[in-house]
Length: 277
Image (cartoon, rainbow, N blue to C red):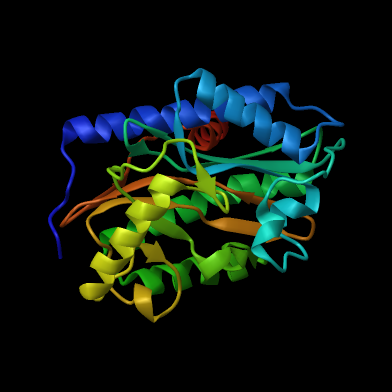
């Protein structure tokens, strides 16, 4: 296994970028209301990030409303792009963005709702179980494909659907590194930044040569212990017309693992609920 590639300064910069991404997602969540389309929400999220100094993206911002938060009836990758779906009272939504600042990347997912939705409330509370499960399994150095299977087993035990299986490549996560490619900033191909594609392509080749993959899925390529570095992890659960996820950075060292930051909206929500008991 390679050595952990980042120092404290690097981790602080990754944390700042992740905080920036969640800050903009919360701004859009405060602005969003019935009648807004997915495209309008994604564009608002992009404008907020650019106003905060973001010049490049790992991938463009996404927004999903209603049953699209659970990827119902998704058949092609093009359906992941923000569309014309309008938000209505009681609908869930998911905002997803991946800004890059000075090469430091974050990739976050923010779930919310407009008005009352009891199914969303239950799923949002249960997401805490998956955050704890993933950390426990990675700390035990279980192969990534087995951690994936443990997450899906918990989803089944809850009576929910695994929706990360619908993502291209069935990924639940991917490695994040500091982008060093020198392609044009702000230019994207099929939703991914040119610099992202250059860096990811290089990482894919390098990791495959060592029998590893920078993409975390449930197949043979992920049949290895967690690789030291940073992983953007996104367990995505669904029930009927409601889907929700979190996405945040997990730090994996040679002998330990921890979430990069606990001062995040979903973690604060769980903490507030527990303190109110």
